[in-house]
Amino acid sequence: MGTLLRKLAPVNAPLHPAGRTHLEFEGVRKAQGDQAKNRIIIAIACFGLLYAVVGGRLVQYGMKAPETVSSIGRASQLMASRPDLLDRNGEVLATDIRTVSLFAEPHKIVDADEAVELLATVLPDLDLRGIHRKLSSNSRFQWLRRQLTPKQQSQILSLGIPGVGFRPETRRFYPGGPTASHVVGHVNIDNKGIAGMEKYVDGQGFGDLADAGLTVNEDINPVRLSLDLRVQHVLRDELSAAVDRYKAIAAAGVVLDVHSGEVLAMASLPDYDPNNPVEALQKDRLNRMSAGTYEMGSTFKAFTTAMALDSGKVKMSDSFDARGSIRIGGFTISDFHGKNRVLSVPEIFIYSSNIGTARMADLVGIEGHQEFLTRLGLLSRMQTELPEVAMPSQPREWKKINSITISFGHGVSTTPLQTAVAAAALMNGGKLINPTFLPRSREDADAIAVQVLDPATSDSMRELMALNVAQGSGRRAQVEGFDVGGKTGTAEKVVNGRYSSAVRFNAFLSAFPISDPRYVVLVVIDEPKPEEGKHSATAGLNAAPTVGAIVRRSAAFLDVKPHFGNGAQALSLSY
Image (cartoon, rainbow, N blue to C red; front, side):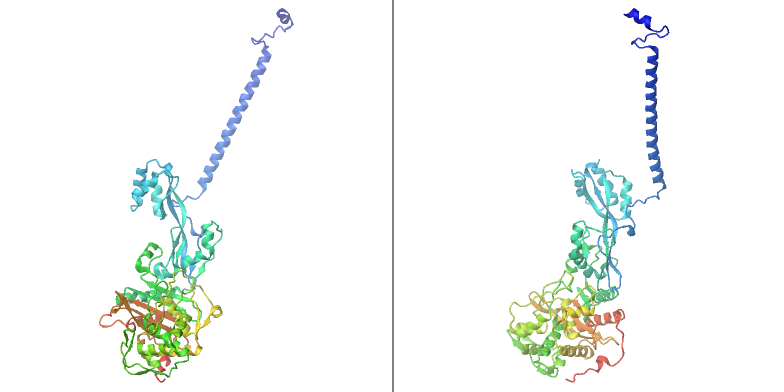
């Protein structure tokens, strides 16, 4: 068979060792070479494409503007997480700014000791043990410091610590600092409102949306408050001056629109900077205007007098025996500077007679007295947007002695703010209007107002308040051209269970212009000392002139124009 094959094969076609001819072998080799060549071309093309992509990206990055070290972007590019708070004129009271917080991924930390040492060079107040414990844990995320400054972020970045990074966050900023802190309030580290109007905003549904992670990519409408930042500054400035001048432990005040119930300004000193809200935890930083209750002293005589007149049992022309003193229940009721004679109703008011006021309350009766103060909102919790509102206190059972002492401001404790609100009802024709820290028109206020007094009673109270500043204990509150009216209150504070004549809570309750009142101004001064050169520290010597200074400086902002006629000076004790 082999011989036959050799005979049939061509002479020049030698056999391949594997049995193939030379031509067949060459064809196979050529095909394999072509395949290898194709593979090389494909590989080169792939590598070329890869390098082209990388090169293109490098060119793209190279053409970008250089990035700053800080990851804090421009405010215009950031979505606010809380609405701005504005005063009535659009001035910013609270806004959001962008910041970053430092975190660690402990499982990526190479050397916890070295990391702690490096971080301490930038943040020397770090809790080193606590941070070391976090960095040595098995967790995958730990906060190290919230709300860094851009400089701190830059310095930490330059340390090059592996496993440490930054997360953008929002921080609340209060441009005015402590100017309106007790009204505006503040937020916690997570930007949630926990006091003041910040807390109110969250309570209107915004907080629930934030907790659920529901946000929008458009600006949140700001919340406008009723405050006038200009008047707020004046009020706080004068209160601060009073604390210094009279060596008081505290002072507070409010400016209230009598027709709308809007709070134009409210302050309580000592206050705090909401940019550093830890100060708010200090005991003496209480909002005394709405969250503290006090015996308001002789300012309550305005309500007792209004009650007597409104009951129809007393007229302005009536007189009461203020000779001697009143003995009841083991107590003696006397006057501070007694006239020891029969006094008319206007005289009882301007001389601040405890005896005459007690006799008017006794004529109305215990039930009528309690009902009247309840009607004016002085014995119930005030309704307003501000969360910090205290509940007034009163005797569990009203007896005659209680009614008599309450008539001149002892025995009932209420908040100064609701005292001002009740006084507004005495001035505005007898309408009780709940206070608001949001803008409210006079028409909207009339829709919710409750008529608690006869308008004629309100007219009489305006006359008495004007008379007291013109001729009585409120003379130092006079401001030429603005017709201030008011009532002083000097309440003895309880020390070791007994009233002390050496420790006082003073107040001046006023309205202006008293001929047609638009605003109530109330100032309280806690434990004032006699001014240098004086031997007394009654409200007429400190709270009254403080109100006068506030009216003088803020009247223009409140659009009250001065007039220079006879005004209150024309009033007399002719009843």
